[in-house]
Amino acid sequence: MLTITNDYCSGNINMSSTISLITTSEFSCSACQKIFKKQSGLSWHLTIMKNITFHEII
Picture 1 (cartoon, rainbow, N blue to C red):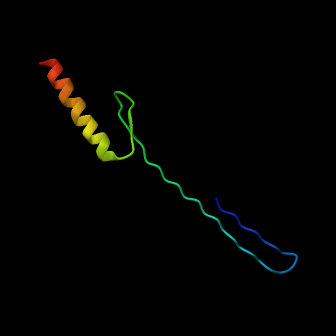
Picture 2: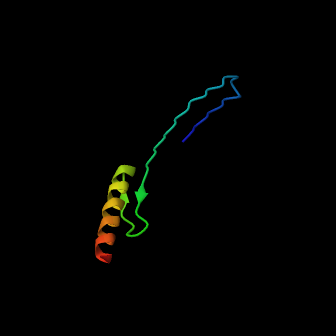
Picture 3: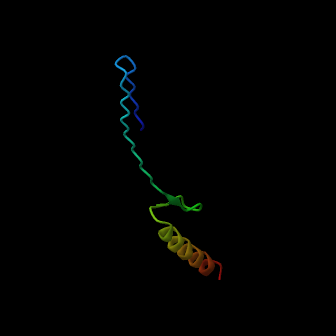
């Protein structure tokens, strides 16, 4: 959010800014749609899923 206030009548320019920056990263498994906060969690999950799938085929 960016707020800029200009007061041209009095000749003063008041520039006050409020910047809200919220970044959230979500990583999701395309197979089961489970959501992870970190990419490392998704990588671990995918490794487990790959091992389970491999063992089910054998």
